[in-house]
Image (cartoon, rainbow over all chains, first blue to last red; front, side, top):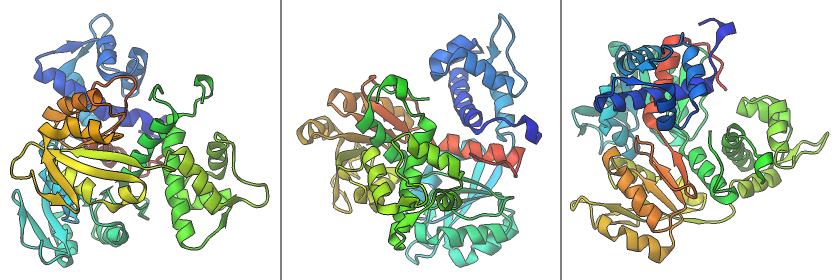
Amino acid sequence: MDRENRVSITVIRRLPKYYRYLGELLKKGINRISSQELSKLTGFTASQIRQDLNNFGGFGQQGYGYNVEELRNQLGKILGLDRTYKTIIAGAGNLGQAVANYRGFEEAGFKILAMFDKNPKLIGLKIRDIEIKDVDEMENFIRENNIDIGIITTPKESAQDVADIFMRSGIRGIWNFAPADLKVDDKVIIENVHLNESLFTLSYFLKNESDYVRD
Amino acid sequence: MDRENRVSITVIRRLPKYYRYLGELLKKGINRISSQELSKLTGFTASQIRQDLNNFGGFGQQGYGYNVEELRNQLGKILGLDRTYKTIIAGAGNLGQAVANYRGFEEAGFKILAMFDKNPKLIGLKIRDIEIKDVDEMENFIRENNIDIGIITTPKESAQDVADIFMRSGIRGIWNFAPADLKVDDKVIIENVHLNESLFTLSYFLKNESDYVRD
């Protein structure tokens, strides 16, 4: 995709939602769907859905709609889900364990190879079949196993140190749960899950209006 | 705020970030900041920051900038953080425990009064001082304690049932971590944390471009 032809981040953030809904339709044995029906499911307007998908070449046929399996496969490719990713988790507390325990990530191709912590009580334990190792071994482990994605579930105070280790050992993607904005090289992709910000958005709407139409 | 004069959700989602940065500045003893300096910190442009804040009346003074403490207090009020909220957590697995253990929520005024689960091995345990109770007691507990916000950290399969209990017992806000789009009454505010969607956004950028400028 060239710079002139970039798809907005807002559109990109809707793609995983389409992908999830299409997966649910497939499970129900539904093979064909119109943008109107997709609209009812997703809450986006039919014209927005058509516009979103047209960014990637459009996949529907006039009068037929979308082939659910084909559209899902195409979206999966666009989202980079047509391959597997080797990941590790830094921070083996509750949040790290919750991420390690969530089967959905592995099903989608994100394999967790190890977890790391500095707490001696945690080192050596296993979450499912994933071992918690000493954080001192992390840098070597990343290099030796060509880890693609590093997940940060440490407290805020350790997050930048972890990100620095990730960067110098060649990790290209960081999924950060720590409530901090980390400084990373331009070539590293970082995706933040800032839970406080999500919670405060909820309290904003609770305070300000209960009939706000969200987008 | 009337319907004609609504602030876009994109702006609202930036407010918690400003709020967090201002809190960090205050801790460092910085009492005054220009939109240019805020821009360097947050990564948003100075004109965007001024525009965002002007939606709520603007708080800066030409040639002076913003008073950090005052701006933070005002944003806190706008975000509904000038009061406390009574919350409960449904689902006391790793994710529920991670949320319960996170001190930041309580500091911001979100008090967790109880957790609920159906697993007999968990019922009766405590996370910090928060008791895990039988989910059968949840509906009464919500009514008796006037719970404001219900947090869903159950598996996907139980999430709608939990949301239904929340709604009929009078909860106004739902913070949902289950990978499902829940059907709720119009008067209930729901804020989703869809981790899969965040992860797939990361893989999209890993696949498509590493120099994409995010917004």
